Length: 342
Image (cartoon, rainbow, N blue to C red; front, side):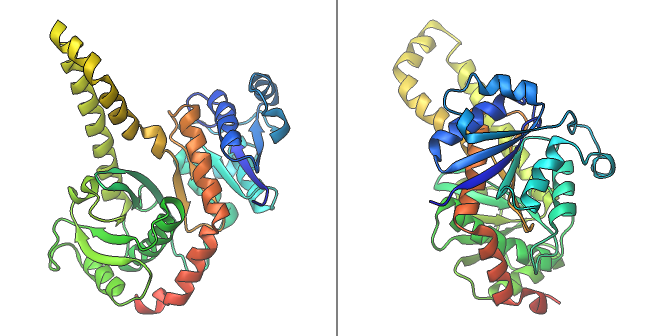
């Protein structure tokens, strides 16, 4: 494979720069053709790199003493954050030094900075945040998860095209199925924009299969490969799913601590429980892609560990290797969505 360079906001995240450096080394072993540019406090980063065997030859450090805080407002960092590790990592993609950027920092600031520096892909009105998570059938992509509170039919159609490309690129699904998240599956359900978006999608020809409207319980069932919604609904659905997973894990732990017999039962069930824990491990699904921007940017969960951050790096590498942005731009241009959604 061709060499790939990824820029890392080394100071973004709850446990940065430790998890960023350690995550880069995990990713480096998975993807030997990848190098990293680390933006942040050089003294801290160098000390951590020295403890990661084999990493030194794959990284360059660019020092900055400034970083974006979790509670910084996007408008604030746009005005005064141009020497932060986050801004500089994105800037390296803009000037061609890196092919993509990964950060576990402030989501709003990251999106705002990326939009200012990179602009949108041709034909895309608004970017969308996409991620994937486990279902009974495998994995499902959902978007938008954080960029747009209210969406027009045209926005939703563009999200559908981007999600279909993302599903093929990241999950390797040849002909993904797609649904619009709604309060019911009947054609008459939902607001006017949802109904209009459904009509437009039915009239366009792309490689995926549009199944119509889906409901909340269709998401964990894996009824479709791509779920399209606005940020308000999608973010609530995602956080509810995360909270439910934590609740069930807590119930399971509590059940096996209730008695001596339960503890003995855990010994016999440990292998199956380990498989369950691995299947639902959020670190395996870490890395939300900012789709629709003229650059590759992946947002890692701020509270992840090194393994989770390495997964986020992998999302960026896959989008680069398989030309995800180019595919999105080509599909948008071919489908003439703008003309059909006016």
